[in-house]
Structure formats: C-alpha cells, structure tokens
Amino acid sequence: MSSGGKILVTGATGFVGAAVARALIARGERVVLLARKTSPRGNVEGLDAEVVIGDLLDAATLAPAFAGVDRLYHVAADYRLWARDPNEIVEANRVGVTNIMTSALRAGVSRVVYTSSVATLKLNAEGRPVDETSPATPEQAIGAYKRSKTIAERVVETMIQTQGLPAVIVNPSTPIGPRDIKPTPTGRVIVEAANGKMPGYVDTGLNLVHVEDVAAGHLLAMEKGRIGERYILGGQDAPFGQFLSEICVMAGRRPPTLKIPRGALFPFAHAAEFLARFTGKEPFATVDALRMAGYRMYFSSHKAQAELGYSARPYAQAIADALSWFRAKGMVK
Image (cartoon, rainbow, N blue to C red; front, side, top):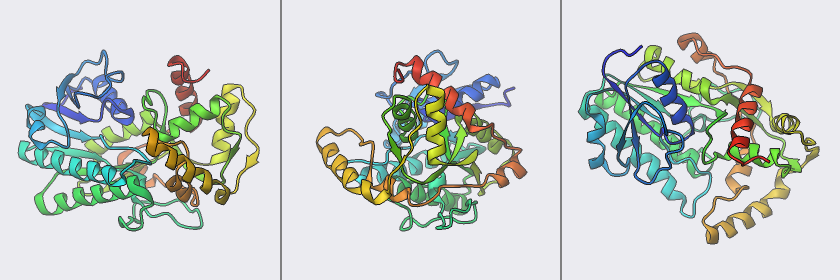
C-alpha cells in the first residue's frame, strides 16, 4: 500500500515507464505521470493516475509536476539507435536528466530511482557476463544512445556525490513484453521475425528480461537499494539465433537458419541510414547496432538478486506476452 506522498514517474507513455507506473498503481500508490503534450497516450489510458504536462528539456515546466511528490522514478529517455543528428540523442538524455534531478533536489524528494541502462557498462571480447563493476567511459560506448546514457549516468553520480541527490541507479538489460508501443529496437525484431521477415541472423547474444520484472526491480530499488549504487535488472543470456527461433516457433514460422557474417551487412546498414536521412524513419539495420553485435551483450543480475531480492521469470514468457500484445495491435499477422 501507499507510504505517504505522491510518486512522480517520467516516461510512463513509453515501454518501461508504463510498466513501472502500472506496478505502482497496482500497489495502491498515488501516482503522477509527467508527459509531453505530444506524447501518445495509449500506454496510460484508463490508468488511475494524474497526468501533468511538462517537457524534460524545458526546466521551467517541471516544477508543477513535483507538487506533493515525495519520490521520483525517472524512466524517460530518448531511446533511438539512430538519428539524423546523433548529438540530438546525447543532448536530450543529458539535459533531460540534469533538469529533472535538479527539480527533484529543489522539491526535496526523499528518494529517486534513475533508469539507466546496461548500455553504460563495458563489454568484454570473450562474451563473459558483465556486472556493475565495469562502467564504460562515454568514449568507449558504441553509438549515440549508449554514449548518451553513459553521460547521463555520470551526471546522476556526480549529483549524488556533490549535491546529495538521494538516487539509486538501475540498469535494465533488454526488456521485452507487452505495451512496447513505439516499438523499441528489440520490439521491432520480434515483429519482423514473427511476420517472417528475418531470413537470417548475426551471431551475437542478448540478455532478455520481461518488462514487468524490470518494473518490479525498480520498486525493489526504491525500497532496498543503496543510494549511489547501480543494479543490473536483467533476465537470461541468449544467443540471438536462439531468440529468433523462439519467436518464430511461437508465431508459427520457420526459424531462420542462415547465419550472416556481420561484415556482409555493413554496406546494407550504410545504405539504410542514407535512405533514412530522407525519410526521417529509424532504419531497421544501423551501423552502430552491427558494431554492438560484435559483442555478446551478456550481464549478471547477481547484485540485484542478493541486495534487492530481485528475480526474473524465463524470457520465453516475455516473448509470448509481447507477441500477444503485438497481435492485438495488428502489428503481427
């Protein structure tokens, strides 16, 4: 049940934010959702929550959202692996986090959970699972999104150390499941594979987790997380080919058998990005995504399990839930 003041959630119109907001409402908390005027409302329709209009990039619009608020979940982020101007992604995530955390300090909130990403961690060439002890520098991060999240995480850490920001950092791995409204790059893979449009795959690996388990991890971090610490909220490591096979089997499709050398796809990705400059639509294959695929993106959630009591169900359940949601929306035939 509710433990006092209201809780502000940013990013609730998006994928992970919607899951966090729903978990809080289910627990009887009084929830305020910050949303831009232009944000699609599909994920928050019918929720028992107050919606306040504001923009993370306009600091002056944020103060009203904090009226009567005691705790903050900052989940919102510009999650794109491509933009015409990559600096747009970096600035959106850096400025957004600075503005919201400054507002939280002014409002005197008692506790903050900041949604970072495993994108801020340094991968190894051997494909061993990475834990919280290997942060990446912005220079080591591949692509604008990873660089932006690394910079934003450092902003939060600095504010914790120098301004007493009472924040706990969580680093979700690759969430999948219902209400992937945009959809995310991983959601697009599920949709394409389920529609029979992925004849081959690159030999890489991901850590896959149900979005509702990630949301539950956020609530645990608020209750039990240590200020200034980061916690990976992941599920299970899986080779990419296996992930695609499971999607296809559930969707009644033949799994892809063609393993495509990564190098062969770079010309295709360059061409897709060139076309995207004219359409403005994020390409399905990007150069940065192919560079990332050179690593197995495997992670350990041991710290979150030990300190927070975090756990994750098998990711196959997340695929099933994602597919039934995409079907209901007419995105999977």
